[in-house]
Length: 199
Image (cartoon, rainbow, N blue to C red; front, top):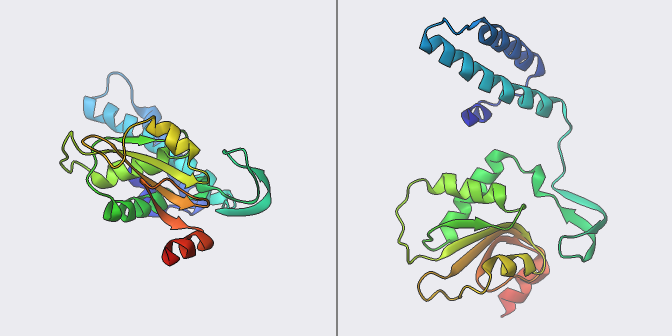
């Protein structure tokens, strides 16, 4: 039922009316109903859960992607600003996944750094679909934000790079600090980009 996210349902009154209609149809089904009616009721129940979530999103203020305050990052470092990838929508992740696939070499399976890389990894898998790969292709390791690279290196767990056979490659959305050579960031902090440009 995740396709419902693509219809742009943000009007609270409309969502509320659909919830009421779905609930009425779903509750009308009984064990004696034909299979297709019972299946329709189950589908409506699934839709109902998504509609409730959409209604909550519609009445909630947008969550900022960038925040200024005092934060302790996953690396343990202190920072005066934070990148909160929970603010990204599924549509954002789908677009980022297509960008990632355009710069990545062929890879076999996908792993992610818990838990920040999970949504990005799922979006990459969706975007890749059933594209063929070789078991000798490297494993792709995914995270959302890289600050020191420690979490990515821990996930790599000693697997080789460059990959002689089944090694690893990595991708992150944002690099706010230095990243391992085997990782490709989609966006990096300005000073880091300048350092790379100057060689």
